[in-house]
Length: 172
Image 1 (tube, one colour):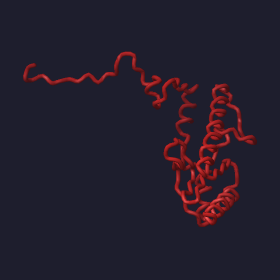
Image 2 (image 1 turned 45 degrees about the vertical axis):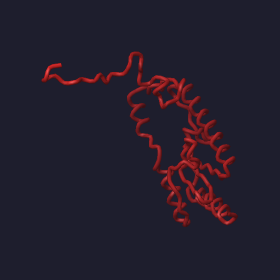
Image 3 (image 1 turned 180 degrees about the horizontal axis):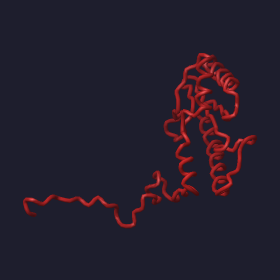
Image 4 (image 1 turned 90 degrees about the vertical axis):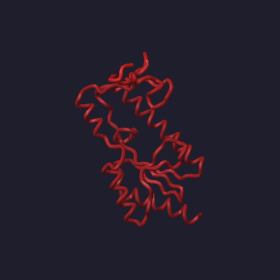
């Protein structure tokens, strides 16, 4: 090698590697490539969906805080399980999930998507199944699980949370 040349390292992915391949997609073997948004507007809308600190979640947190309770936000109640509760009361072992009407299939307010309806129906059903599985795992581990719909009155939901937390702290 001449004095003026540089070592160049080939950083290109190996042949056959795709960024959405089963091996690379969130580390799940056998996972399929995620579907694309049906339009640019849909994609922009989906990117705007927040994972935490939504208006209903902030309202619930304010109401719970006003009742004198302190909690952790967006935490895994069971560190080994990849599920995040919106509010966690570690000492009382109470996990609170605030479920969106669309994403979790609220019986009163869930609306069916006009485009890609089959995909969204399956997605909501998978969310419901995951929610049931999460509830079972937490209950088996001694946790109380409270699920609140986004349309519920935050004050009433906060009172339900406070009642559960206080009853479990007193018993401990």
